[in-house]
Image (cartoon, rainbow, N blue to C red; front, side, top):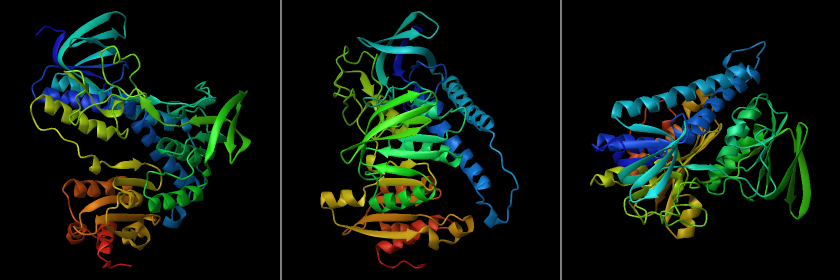
Length: 468
């Protein structure tokens, strides 16, 4: 092969693309990976998952110190100051370390990186509009599209990326807003809204849907909303934002509520109304790829598009937009290319909201089981009754397990509370291996740990909970 010929060309170096590229190299393929950004890692590492979690961690620690939450532990602080520049610098340092790490992994595994805009050119070719100028054409036996997603906005709301911005803007506000208006009460809005609330901003969330977190199990969503309101976040549900107007350092947001036109004023607006498949400029339509009206690429069960030799994964195909979903799809796709079995169990993919308390869900919700007519049993256990949770001072929350009424197979696993993202791993493994609630109840969980809440919830499925 020449330097421009590859077994696989991956377009996009986010979690799905870079992991898929590395796995393909491990399987003996000659691999190239194209990304338009100078730093590898995609939205997740650069301006999404990682920087937001860094700020969530830092802001929570500041909140605990500044608002007297450490007093109960016998730790009294006379004066707490916020150094926002240092907090943002720590976030940037973590991002730099991880993006450099991806570059190192490419070098270790022999993956060739190209920095520029990749575009399908037909007949197994991809052109790269190189970052430094010029164009290079690559040829490949297979092409994997992993270009991810980008933030959306709504009619009447114009982003200036200063007073009115998206999630990327909200990662780097130069000062703490006096009043942050968040348009959209989903994962991004809640996480970044929580960051700035902890740092002292007034935060108002405007959400179009009438119900809070409508895709989350209702019991979990109800407890989460109660906790967020207690923290000072304000919510207006069932409202339609119609416009924004910037005047100096203030922004007026217009919205409709129950047929009435209303306004709210803030000094920063975060537009967190979701994301869309990033397929613009890819040449997908010209290449003949089947897409829906939103630009989402259609694939079969093994991530093949309708064009032979072209595959797609992650945010550009149907399904939840999650980094870990994209990673597993990337591995499954390249393993299928190599003639190995590649599979993703979509019932066992956790969905996490990294607020405090965290929200985690795996599998079916109770409302989904009801709508599908599936007989089920449920078990719950509160953090309040767990010894480790009491010792940590983290007593808000619960674990809820849904199991088939006849087979006892676990169908849904839901948590709201401290370290819910970590506890969800046990639920994901249980669902992946078709475990029963009895299996979890019979498994020994170390004492004292938060994982005992899982055991007690599993026991409650059979009506024999012990510690409550």
